[in-house]
Image 1 (cartoon, protein in one colour):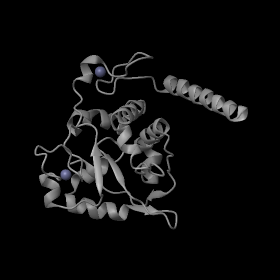
Image 2: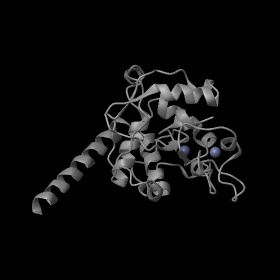
Image 3: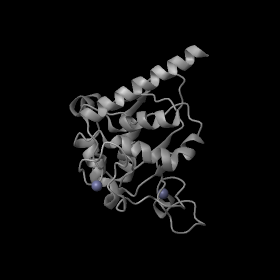
Image 4: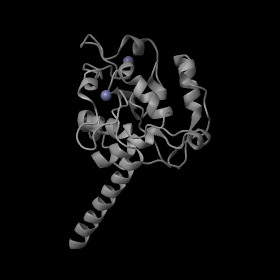
Length: 225
Ligand SMILES: [Zn+2]
Ligand SMILES: [Zn+2]
């Protein structure tokens, strides 16, 4: 008993040190306007908080977009065409976070991951836990792209989200075997085809039941239009 308590304390000290180191390397910035944020307290400036638009219910059961008619289960788009995933969920309306996600992905703003993980845990934590998932799997980058960028933004968020929700994060199960062209240049159907061939499951006997966090960097490539 004592031993495990000691371990827990050790673990939380280690996490504390890690986050202090991270804060020094990647100081806090408001993810919307990119201005430096105070070391403690809210990351988001009060003025910027009002610009983020949370997707409100009812949601399309497949892609997670807001739908007007609550009697409908799917949005007009999903009624027309299929997706390669079973279910997606969006936290923010894409347009309101697009510049921020761009900087997170391409501008080395790794510090934003903490904000997104915190928001996801706060607003969608119960929903994510209800899946009783064995693991969170961030969408992998192709190794060439990972070497160039130096980090996978989806993994940064997943690690922080997993720690908050006590769900393990797996990064070795799925590999991106093809470095695809930017998906936004492709139509929905082509995008599905490209994605189907882009990933490989690396462990025998593992079946993935996929739940995607859409438009919030975890799976941004797949679901944004
Ligand atoms: Zn701001
Ligand atoms: Zn839909």
